[in-house]
Figure (cartoon, rainbow, N blue to C red):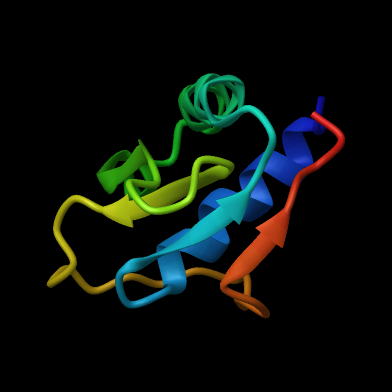
Length: 89
């Protein structure tokens, strides 16, 4: 299981991307549940616009996208890569 800090980092990286990002993971449903919990605990209204979906193309991927991609986003975090691996879930 990833720590809450790692999960929040994923959320904020997705937030600053124009559409969102994909995350490689062996269990997308478990990661999705963890991200929902991290988002609730963060109490950051900016994160409320993120949606978590299984990739329709790759079975071992979770997609984090913006529910409203036209919204302006700001974050102190800088996205470094659009694909992260979470193989140790």
